[in-house]
Length: 130
Image 1 (cartoon, one colour):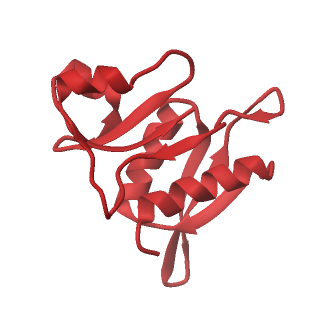
Image 2: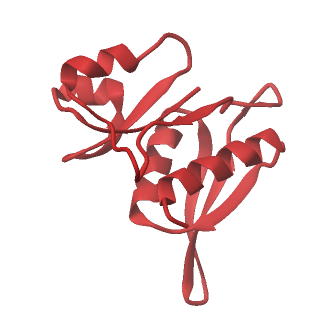
């Protein structure tokens, strides 16, 4: 597993497409922070930290609306081979209408593009989710 965020997001997307309600994955601080942002925005229903023996895992409950998953697509923007950084003014170009968010990691933690714009900070654009 080279990129924990990509692995986390792809597991959520694949589980949603397969109509699974719960997905388990390895624990890391960054994936937990990303999960909490997705929960706040309504893309996942719940996120729990579990300990199974020596290993810690994260259990994610995927949100559904009228028997359809809320997550319809995920685009990973920043990868290990190509990091993408945006300033405060550039973030608004990424935001679109509808149920769509951009998630960034900043010096103040992981947050949505809208929150970063309100605080007047930029950062690394991790992904977009619809």
